[in-house]
Image (cartoon, rainbow, N blue to C red):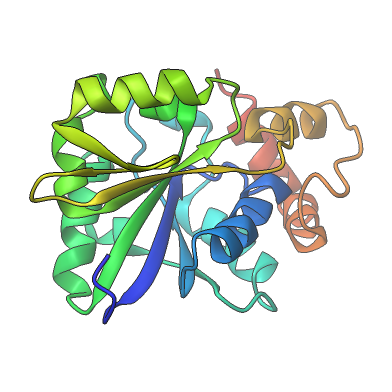
Amino acid sequence: MNKNYKKIGLLGGSFNPLHIGHLRLCVEMLEQAGLDEVQLVPAYNPPHKNISNILPFEMRCSIIEQAIENSPGISLNRLEKKRTGPSYTYDMLSNFKMENPDSSPAFIMGDNDLLTMPHWYRGAEILRLSDLLIVGREGCGMDQVHDFILNFWPAHQKGKTSWSIEGGNDIRYFSVPRLDLSSSLVRSRWLESKCIDWLMPPSGVRILNHFFNEIESTWRKS
């Protein structure tokens, strides 16, 4: 990252819905990675997902906005709403850099997602646009992450948990407390009329209950 630029972490996803694991990850990245801000970037049209059971974009944004209302350093970015077509990470980062020329982006991703990057749209080029902050939460192990990075990019190791590519950006690896939680788990429990308190922020639970019929109809679609 350019030391004179604002260091912005970008956490993308469908957030269908946002849960406390997403928020805790933002806090960990602010503290461990030394970021000035973490922005949650909901996908408008998530590729490789069944969009019929995804809540409307603005409803997902509303859940995020209310959850982070009193969380300094965490914000919502509606960047993806301005785009057409699938919400590819490469395109999102390209647009972010054009709109934020004085910021240094760092894309936050899990170690399991890192290993799938050969199948991403322009996956190898993403490191030309942004630093990568790899979150060790899926049990891949440092050796597997290290071997993948050196084989996928012309990278060299800078430190025990950091790498760099020639003419590009840096990759850093972080260990964070693992919360065995997913949006699909929240959806399934809610559809089964089970309590989801503290799996989601209280404000999010209230939104789900307020729009019960619409959300139930959407989430029951296969």
